[in-house]
Image (cartoon, rainbow, N blue to C red; front, side, top):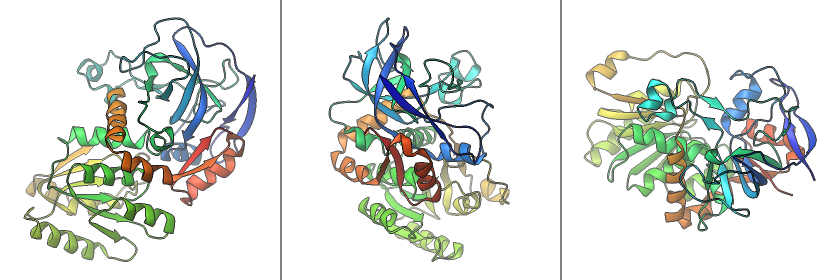
Amino acid sequence: MEKICAVFKGPEKPFETRSYTVTAPQAGTAGLKLIISGICGTDVHIYEGRLGMPDMPLVLGHEFIGEIDALGSGKAIDALGNQLHPGDKAIACVAVSCGKCINCLAGETASCLAFQVTYLKNADEPPHFHGGFSEYLYSPFANLVKLPDEVDPMAAAAFPCGGPTVIRSCAYGGGLKSGELAVIQGNGSLGLFAAAYAKAHGCKVIMIGSASNPERKQLTLELQPDHFLDFRQKSEEEIRNFILAEASSLGRGDGADVVIETSGAAEAFPLGLSLLRTRGRYFVPGQYSDRGTVSIPPHLITFKALQIFGSGQYTMADIGTYLDFLTAHPELQAIFKKLLRCFPVSEVNSAIEAARSGKAVKTVFCAK
Protein backbone atom coordinates (compact mmCIF):
# COMPACT_ATOMS: atom_id res chain seq x y z
CA MET A 1 0.00 0.00 0.00
CA GLU A 2 1.32 3.43 -0.93
CA LYS A 3 0.47 6.78 0.63
CA ILE A 4 1.31 10.38 -0.27
CA CYS A 5 3.27 12.93 1.73
CA ALA A 6 4.14 16.56 0.97
CA VAL A 7 7.86 17.37 1.11
CA PHE A 8 9.25 20.78 2.07
CA LYS A 9 12.24 21.69 -0.14
CA GLY A 10 13.08 25.09 1.34
CA PRO A 11 11.55 28.54 1.97
CA GLU A 12 9.19 29.80 -0.72
CA LYS A 13 9.76 26.70 -2.86
CA PRO A 14 6.76 24.62 -3.98
CA PHE A 15 6.14 21.50 -1.94
CA GLU A 16 6.72 18.21 -3.74
CA THR A 17 4.32 15.30 -3.32
CA ARG A 18 5.84 11.84 -3.07
CA SER A 19 4.44 8.33 -2.71
CA TYR A 20 6.01 5.78 -0.39
CA THR A 21 5.11 2.26 0.64
CA VAL A 22 3.57 1.84 4.09
CA THR A 23 5.47 -0.72 6.16
CA ALA A 24 4.96 -2.28 9.57
CA PRO A 25 5.77 0.17 12.40
CA GLN A 26 8.94 -0.26 14.39
CA ALA A 27 8.98 -1.19 18.09
CA GLY A 28 7.39 1.45 20.30
CA THR A 29 5.75 3.10 17.30
CA ALA A 30 2.25 3.27 15.87
CA GLY A 31 1.24 3.67 12.25
CA LEU A 32 -1.74 5.98 11.78
CA LYS A 33 -3.97 6.62 8.78
CA LEU A 34 -4.82 10.25 8.17
CA ILE A 35 -8.16 11.52 9.39
CA ILE A 36 -7.29 15.21 9.42
CA SER A 37 -4.09 17.24 9.81
CA GLY A 38 -3.77 20.97 10.22
CA ILE A 39 -1.49 23.66 8.85
CA CYS A 40 -0.34 25.73 11.83
CA GLY A 41 0.91 29.31 11.70
CA THR A 42 4.31 27.86 12.58
CA ASP A 43 4.26 25.84 9.34
CA VAL A 44 3.59 29.04 7.41
CA HIS A 45 6.49 30.74 9.22
CA ILE A 46 8.76 27.85 8.20
CA TYR A 47 7.57 28.09 4.59
CA GLU A 48 8.28 31.83 4.60
CA GLY A 49 11.76 31.30 6.04
CA ARG A 50 11.01 32.96 9.37
CA LEU A 51 11.95 29.79 11.29
CA GLY A 52 15.07 27.99 10.16
CA MET A 53 15.01 24.29 9.26
CA PRO A 54 17.81 21.84 8.38
CA ASP A 55 18.79 21.77 4.71
CA MET A 56 17.15 18.48 3.77
CA PRO A 57 13.74 17.38 2.45
CA LEU A 58 11.26 17.36 5.32
CA VAL A 59 7.67 16.32 5.93
CA LEU A 60 6.40 19.19 8.09
CA GLY A 61 3.25 19.25 10.18
CA HIS A 62 2.52 18.78 13.87
CA GLU A 63 -1.29 18.71 13.97
CA PHE A 64 -1.96 15.17 12.75
CA ILE A 65 -5.07 13.31 13.95
CA GLY A 66 -5.30 9.76 12.70
CA GLU A 67 -6.71 6.30 13.20
CA ILE A 68 -4.27 3.73 14.51
CA ASP A 69 -3.64 1.28 11.71
CA ALA A 70 -0.93 -0.87 13.26
CA LEU A 71 1.12 -1.08 16.45
CA GLY A 72 4.77 -2.02 16.74
CA SER A 73 5.97 -4.25 19.53
CA GLY A 74 6.10 -2.96 23.08
CA LYS A 75 3.63 -1.65 25.62
CA ALA A 76 1.19 0.45 23.59
CA ILE A 77 0.38 3.19 26.09
CA ASP A 78 -0.19 6.81 25.12
CA ALA A 79 1.33 9.86 26.83
CA LEU A 80 -1.47 10.00 29.40
CA GLY A 81 -1.50 6.31 30.28
CA ASN A 82 -4.30 5.13 27.98
CA GLN A 83 -4.07 1.73 26.32
CA LEU A 84 -3.86 1.99 22.53
CA HIS A 85 -5.56 -0.37 20.08
CA PRO A 86 -5.93 -0.52 16.30
CA GLY A 87 -8.93 1.59 15.33
CA ASP A 88 -8.38 4.15 18.11
CA LYS A 89 -8.22 7.79 17.08
CA ALA A 90 -5.36 9.87 18.42
CA ILE A 91 -3.61 13.23 18.24
CA ALA A 92 0.08 12.92 17.41
CA CYS A 93 2.39 15.43 19.09
CA VAL A 94 5.86 15.96 17.61
CA ALA A 95 7.51 17.51 20.68
CA VAL A 96 10.31 15.62 22.40
CA SER A 97 11.70 17.01 25.67
CA CYS A 98 15.08 15.78 26.88
CA GLY A 99 14.03 14.94 30.44
CA LYS A 100 17.48 15.94 31.72
CA CYS A 101 17.80 19.74 31.62
CA ILE A 102 17.07 21.99 34.59
CA ASN A 103 13.58 22.79 33.31
CA CYS A 104 12.60 19.20 32.56
CA LEU A 105 13.82 18.08 35.98
CA ALA A 106 11.60 20.78 37.49
CA GLY A 107 8.57 19.50 35.53
CA GLU A 108 8.74 22.37 33.01
CA THR A 109 8.91 20.11 29.96
CA ALA A 110 7.26 22.76 27.77
CA SER A 111 10.42 24.85 28.25
CA CYS A 112 12.98 22.11 27.65
CA LEU A 113 16.42 23.54 26.85
CA ALA A 114 17.15 20.72 24.37
CA PHE A 115 13.74 20.58 22.72
CA GLN A 116 13.46 18.40 19.60
CA VAL A 117 10.69 17.43 17.18
CA THR A 118 10.04 14.01 15.69
CA TYR A 119 9.74 15.17 12.07
CA LEU A 120 13.30 16.51 11.74
CA LYS A 121 14.27 13.51 9.63
CA ASN A 122 15.14 13.29 5.96
CA ALA A 123 11.98 12.40 4.02
CA ASP A 124 14.09 10.13 1.80
CA GLU A 125 14.88 7.90 4.77
CA PRO A 126 12.46 5.05 5.62
CA PRO A 127 9.84 4.97 6.94
CA HIS A 128 9.42 8.41 5.27
CA PHE A 129 6.14 9.44 6.96
CA HIS A 130 7.67 11.55 9.72
CA GLY A 131 5.38 14.62 9.76
CA GLY A 132 1.76 15.61 9.54
CA PHE A 133 1.61 16.79 5.90
CA SER A 134 0.90 13.20 4.93
CA GLU A 135 -1.71 10.51 4.42
CA TYR A 136 0.09 8.34 6.96
CA LEU A 137 2.24 8.90 10.04
CA TYR A 138 4.56 6.88 12.23
CA SER A 139 4.54 8.15 15.80
CA PRO A 140 6.09 6.94 19.06
CA PHE A 141 3.45 5.70 21.50
CA ALA A 142 4.61 8.35 23.98
CA ASN A 143 3.75 11.12 21.49
CA LEU A 144 0.13 10.07 21.07
CA VAL A 145 -2.95 11.12 23.02
CA LYS A 146 -6.04 9.01 22.46
CA LEU A 147 -9.23 10.90 21.58
CA PRO A 148 -12.23 10.31 23.85
CA ASP A 149 -15.27 8.88 22.10
CA GLU A 150 -17.11 12.15 22.85
CA VAL A 151 -14.67 14.24 20.81
CA ASP A 152 -15.23 14.63 17.08
CA PRO A 153 -11.82 14.53 15.33
CA MET A 154 -12.98 17.32 13.02
CA ALA A 155 -13.64 19.56 16.03
CA ALA A 156 -10.36 18.62 17.68
CA ALA A 157 -8.56 19.51 14.43
CA ALA A 158 -9.48 23.17 14.81
CA PHE A 159 -6.93 23.76 17.59
CA PRO A 160 -4.76 20.67 18.27
CA CYS A 161 -1.75 22.96 18.71
CA GLY A 162 -3.41 26.33 19.38
CA GLY A 163 -5.67 24.98 22.12
CA PRO A 164 -2.92 23.43 24.27
CA THR A 165 -0.71 26.47 23.58
CA VAL A 166 -3.33 28.86 24.99
CA ILE A 167 -4.04 26.48 27.88
CA ARG A 168 -0.33 26.41 28.81
CA SER A 169 -0.04 30.21 28.68
CA CYS A 170 -3.06 30.56 30.95
CA ALA A 171 -1.61 27.99 33.36
CA TYR A 172 1.65 29.96 33.58
CA GLY A 173 -0.34 33.07 34.47
CA GLY A 174 -2.44 31.50 37.22
CA GLY A 175 -5.45 30.54 35.11
CA LEU A 176 -8.60 32.47 34.25
CA LYS A 177 -11.17 33.46 36.85
CA SER A 178 -14.91 34.04 36.53
CA GLY A 179 -15.76 37.73 36.34
CA GLU A 180 -12.38 38.81 34.99
CA LEU A 181 -12.15 41.10 31.99
CA ALA A 182 -10.13 39.34 29.28
CA VAL A 183 -8.98 41.02 26.08
CA ILE A 184 -7.97 38.81 23.15
CA GLN A 185 -5.67 40.38 20.55
CA GLY A 186 -6.30 38.67 17.22
CA ASN A 187 -9.14 36.52 15.90
CA GLY A 188 -7.12 33.92 14.02
CA SER A 189 -7.14 30.30 15.09
CA LEU A 190 -5.27 30.95 18.36
CA GLY A 191 -7.46 33.91 19.23
CA LEU A 192 -10.73 32.12 18.53
CA PHE A 193 -9.81 29.34 20.93
CA ALA A 194 -8.63 31.86 23.54
CA ALA A 195 -12.01 33.61 23.32
CA ALA A 196 -13.94 30.35 23.70
CA TYR A 197 -11.73 29.26 26.60
CA ALA A 198 -12.09 32.59 28.41
CA LYS A 199 -15.87 32.68 27.92
CA ALA A 200 -16.17 29.14 29.27
CA HIS A 201 -14.32 30.28 32.39
CA GLY A 202 -16.85 33.04 33.01
CA CYS A 203 -14.72 35.95 31.78
CA LYS A 204 -16.06 39.05 30.09
CA VAL A 205 -14.35 38.91 26.70
CA ILE A 206 -13.37 41.72 24.37
CA MET A 207 -11.82 40.65 21.06
CA ILE A 208 -9.63 42.93 18.97
CA GLY A 209 -9.41 41.54 15.46
CA SER A 210 -10.19 41.85 11.80
CA ALA A 211 -13.57 41.89 10.10
CA SER A 212 -12.12 41.82 6.58
CA ASN A 213 -12.91 38.11 6.13
CA PRO A 214 -16.70 37.68 6.48
CA GLU A 215 -16.35 33.98 7.34
CA ARG A 216 -13.86 34.71 10.12
CA LYS A 217 -16.03 37.52 11.49
CA GLN A 218 -19.11 35.27 11.54
CA LEU A 219 -17.24 32.54 13.43
CA THR A 220 -15.87 35.14 15.83
CA LEU A 221 -19.37 36.34 16.63
CA GLU A 222 -20.68 32.78 17.03
CA LEU A 223 -18.31 32.42 19.97
CA GLN A 224 -20.21 35.31 21.57
CA PRO A 225 -17.50 37.69 22.77
CA ASP A 226 -19.04 40.46 24.82
CA HIS A 227 -17.54 42.98 22.42
CA PHE A 228 -15.66 42.80 19.11
CA LEU A 229 -13.43 45.70 18.06
CA ASP A 230 -12.12 45.89 14.49
CA PHE A 231 -8.56 47.22 14.75
CA ARG A 232 -8.87 48.63 11.23
CA GLN A 233 -11.87 50.74 12.23
CA LYS A 234 -10.74 52.00 15.65
CA SER A 235 -7.59 53.84 16.65
CA GLU A 236 -5.42 52.55 19.49
CA GLU A 237 -6.62 55.46 21.63
CA GLU A 238 -10.25 54.53 20.96
CA ILE A 239 -9.53 50.91 21.86
CA ARG A 240 -7.80 51.92 25.10
CA ASN A 241 -10.62 54.26 26.08
CA PHE A 242 -13.25 51.61 25.34
CA ILE A 243 -11.53 48.99 27.47
CA LEU A 244 -10.88 51.43 30.30
CA ALA A 245 -14.57 52.38 30.34
CA GLU A 246 -15.61 48.71 30.27
CA ALA A 247 -13.20 47.86 33.11
CA SER A 248 -14.54 50.75 35.16
CA SER A 249 -18.16 49.71 34.62
CA LEU A 250 -17.32 46.15 35.70
CA GLY A 251 -15.40 47.29 38.77
CA ARG A 252 -12.15 45.81 37.44
CA GLY A 253 -9.97 48.86 38.02
CA ASP A 254 -7.86 50.66 35.43
CA GLY A 255 -7.84 48.10 32.63
CA ALA A 256 -8.22 44.45 31.71
CA ASP A 257 -7.35 41.71 34.18
CA VAL A 258 -5.87 39.61 31.37
CA VAL A 259 -4.73 40.33 27.82
CA ILE A 260 -3.89 37.36 25.55
CA GLU A 261 -1.75 38.25 22.52
CA THR A 262 -2.48 35.84 19.65
CA SER A 263 -2.09 38.05 16.57
CA GLY A 264 1.64 37.54 16.08
CA ALA A 265 2.01 41.19 15.08
CA ALA A 266 4.96 42.80 16.87
CA GLU A 267 3.15 46.14 17.05
CA ALA A 268 0.35 44.49 19.04
CA PHE A 269 2.63 44.04 22.05
CA PRO A 270 2.88 47.67 23.29
CA LEU A 271 -0.86 48.09 22.77
CA GLY A 272 -1.53 44.99 24.85
CA LEU A 273 0.60 46.30 27.70
CA SER A 274 -1.36 49.56 27.73
CA LEU A 275 -4.70 47.74 28.04
CA LEU A 276 -3.88 46.03 31.35
CA ARG A 277 -4.97 47.13 34.78
CA THR A 278 -2.49 47.56 37.59
CA ARG A 279 -1.25 44.02 38.43
CA GLY A 280 -2.77 42.79 35.19
CA ARG A 281 -1.48 39.66 33.45
CA TYR A 282 -0.23 39.55 29.84
CA PHE A 283 -0.19 36.10 28.23
CA VAL A 284 1.97 36.02 25.08
CA PRO A 285 1.69 32.73 23.15
CA GLY A 286 1.29 34.35 19.72
CA GLN A 287 4.72 35.90 18.96
CA TYR A 288 6.18 32.76 17.41
CA SER A 289 8.52 34.22 14.82
CA ASP A 290 10.78 37.25 14.58
CA ARG A 291 8.60 40.02 13.18
CA GLY A 292 11.01 42.75 14.18
CA THR A 293 11.34 44.98 17.21
CA VAL A 294 9.02 47.55 18.74
CA SER A 295 9.37 50.32 21.27
CA ILE A 296 7.71 49.78 24.65
CA PRO A 297 7.45 52.01 27.75
CA PRO A 298 9.26 49.94 30.45
CA HIS A 299 8.09 52.27 33.22
CA LEU A 300 4.54 51.05 32.56
CA ILE A 301 5.59 47.56 33.67
CA THR A 302 7.16 49.02 36.82
CA PHE A 303 4.47 51.44 37.91
CA LYS A 304 1.55 49.14 37.12
CA ALA A 305 3.41 46.06 38.42
CA LEU A 306 2.46 44.16 35.27
CA GLN A 307 2.96 40.42 34.93
CA ILE A 308 4.11 39.09 31.54
CA PHE A 309 4.03 35.39 30.66
CA GLY A 310 5.60 34.07 27.48
CA SER A 311 4.63 30.60 26.32
CA GLY A 312 5.98 28.90 23.21
CA GLN A 313 5.20 25.21 23.76
CA TYR A 314 2.86 22.96 25.73
CA THR A 315 2.92 19.66 27.58
CA MET A 316 1.24 16.37 26.74
CA ALA A 317 -1.01 16.98 29.75
CA ASP A 318 -2.18 20.22 28.11
CA ILE A 319 -3.43 18.15 25.16
CA GLY A 320 -5.43 16.11 27.67
CA THR A 321 -6.87 19.32 29.13
CA TYR A 322 -7.80 20.45 25.62
CA LEU A 323 -9.66 17.20 24.93
CA ASP A 324 -11.38 17.40 28.33
CA PHE A 325 -12.51 20.93 27.41
CA LEU A 326 -13.97 19.69 24.12
CA THR A 327 -15.71 16.83 25.90
CA ALA A 328 -17.29 19.24 28.35
CA HIS A 329 -18.45 21.63 25.60
CA PRO A 330 -20.10 19.76 22.73
CA GLU A 331 -21.77 23.01 21.70
CA LEU A 332 -18.33 24.44 20.92
CA GLN A 333 -17.35 21.37 18.94
CA ALA A 334 -20.15 22.18 16.51
CA ILE A 335 -18.73 25.69 16.02
CA PHE A 336 -15.09 24.61 15.85
CA LYS A 337 -15.82 22.25 12.94
CA LYS A 338 -16.97 25.23 10.88
CA LEU A 339 -13.48 26.72 10.93
CA LEU A 340 -12.03 24.03 8.69
CA ARG A 341 -11.25 24.20 4.99
CA CYS A 342 -10.14 20.79 3.76
CA PHE A 343 -7.62 19.90 1.06
CA PRO A 344 -6.18 16.56 -0.03
CA VAL A 345 -2.45 16.22 0.63
CA SER A 346 -1.91 16.25 -3.15
CA GLU A 347 -3.06 19.91 -3.19
CA VAL A 348 -0.51 21.01 -0.60
CA ASN A 349 0.56 24.16 -2.45
CA SER A 350 -3.02 25.42 -2.69
CA ALA A 351 -3.50 24.59 1.00
CA ILE A 352 -0.39 26.55 2.03
CA GLU A 353 -1.51 29.55 0.02
CA ALA A 354 -4.97 29.44 1.64
CA ALA A 355 -3.36 29.37 5.08
CA ARG A 356 -0.79 32.02 4.24
CA SER A 357 -3.27 34.47 2.76
CA GLY A 358 -5.73 34.15 5.63
CA LYS A 359 -8.53 33.32 3.18
CA ALA A 360 -9.16 30.12 5.14
CA VAL A 361 -9.74 30.35 8.89
CA LYS A 362 -8.16 26.94 9.49
CA THR A 363 -6.59 24.99 6.65
CA VAL A 364 -6.40 21.20 7.01
CA PHE A 365 -5.56 18.09 5.04
CA CYS A 366 -8.30 15.47 5.03
CA ALA A 367 -8.42 11.84 4.04
CA LYS A 368 -9.86 11.22 0.59
